[in-house]
Length: 106
Image (cartoon, rainbow, N blue to C red; front, side):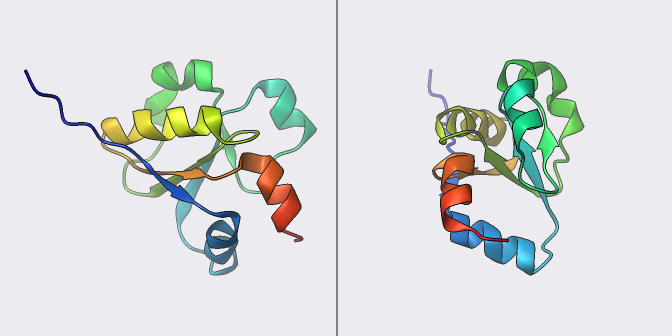
């Protein structure tokens, strides 16, 4: 039996900033814990903790590009791969919110 392996691609902080500045229509998803999200989030993002993603995937629009982030990019890489296998056009923010904080000053 063969399975089609689908993986999400990465997006850099610079590429995400370009999308934000261009006002592109995309869905920014934070998969960190509630405590992490409350402490800081990228403006305009939606929050679904990774452990709830399978049960709440229906909340995410399939007709938009999805950019997923977490703290450093590990959980969001897993989530992005999962979403890609489910038919979403998902991208993982390389370096997560830590890279965003370091690279972006908006």
